[in-house]
Length: 229
Image (cartoon, rainbow, N blue to C red; front, side, top):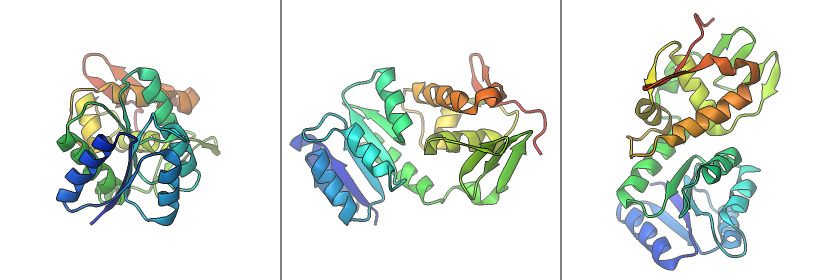
């Protein structure tokens, strides 16, 4: 069974999450602060990190930044805050998902399962072409990189997955709910601003090719390319 690192300075919250996941068969380690979390992370092999933001000694942002220097392990960030800035900052650091307190433990488990599954490559990406190109934009799925005019473009893991999802289904209109399910791997839970935030980030990263991601008002988005090579 998968091993998860739960990091939260609130003992009640930390224990509640750990006990619930343990009851489902997950192997759980717990940490009460950022420094302890990093020590555990360096020693163990985890499938997921569930990480609070506001903690003593080292906050969640710093922990996430440190982990991302050496690992692309899935990270779910927990916070009592729900402002757009906090989410955008977390996603830019490489956070895979963002759950605002208070939350349902069932929802947290569902998101965790989906993220772990996708990180292990157990979705249908194996059945897709390894490279998709449109003009000077090239997406290499095996290498997990994107280039524009042969220049490597820096994307967060979730930006890459979002772009890949759009590119595999060119000119198809997706609702935000469908994108959440297709990219994040879980059903809609009531906050589709996550999709809008990532689309905004992806457009900024794509520069002149941002025009390929078209907003379909009242519905969602599509990757409008004409015909991909």
